[in-house]
Length: 445
Image (cartoon, rainbow, N blue to C red; front, side):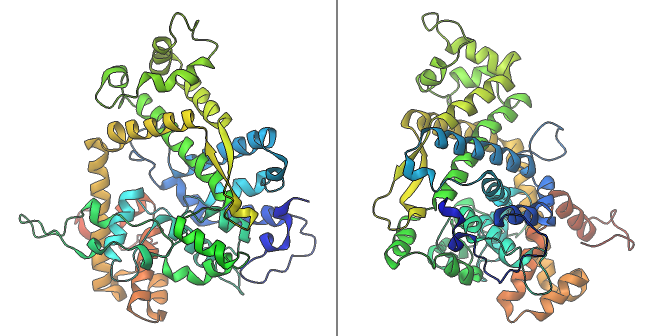
């Protein structure tokens, strides 16, 4: 019997009674609760890198999420074919892997990582903000539940697979987040990436959920998880799939949208060392002989006429180079193993990450949109905080009014903004600050 079918992994935070005639597995039920949620649908309106109106081609958070699921299942199949017998017992089903992948980015706010920093600035005196922490919060407390519970009430295995950072905000908060940089020109607070980027963590408001997640583990394991920031085995599969999907597909987006060209790739200051491609190129059958050199034909295909084909082959190469590593200091199987890339493949992926970061993500055209999104978030938060009774939608105000203290009230505002799409954020900002936009008949959400 697969280890993940044991009651300890299919347990839920709140009591669950299976409906008569419902023959779904616990993980199939998890998947249904996720994909039918508004939080999942919202991902179609959240940016990946580029603005959603820039092109019909580039990815958003929902298409990225679907791709992560496919890559993750590819990794599982590769491990199923290559791993040692003791690992086979802890490999997840396709449905469990799809569900973990489906929620891995569900807590991302409008404008992605830029929005994270803006909300962390706004919440710096009230517990901060972090996208993965918001994922755990959404799934355990915020998404549509039932008359007897809040949240999606997912299984322990699914939530452990999504918990990327096993430390609370209060333990790792940056002291610099409390600093302000005021513009001498307009007097506004300016975001500083090094100060306001959130630490990798879960939110202290979900400490009860995390405590429950860790109940099956020994005190020694719990201590090691916190000290080493260890991810559960299931989470390392998802995290590897996320890295592969993010870096390789961002490369594809940059090429197709004209943000990257052959000259930058081959000879620019941020270029990837051609030697890092050698192992990948040795597996390519349609690039000519090794004696004739395969790097030049590869670059031509990547940029000119076979971009999608080469991107697919790079993804396949990385998936086929996943392996399982042991962590013998852990008692529990869930943490005794982790998924990693073989050294040559890992070096290539890290080089891709640096190249895409410098040439695409840090490009002024992208950063200007990121800056705009951050300013809209800070503006809205400030005015919702200033006059919540008159500016928040009624259903949000009801939650605000019932909150126990100031930090809980600020968390209501934070949850509201974090749950917007990019277009929804811009629409709400324009209603408040653009005198030519908005009507009393608009539906507030």
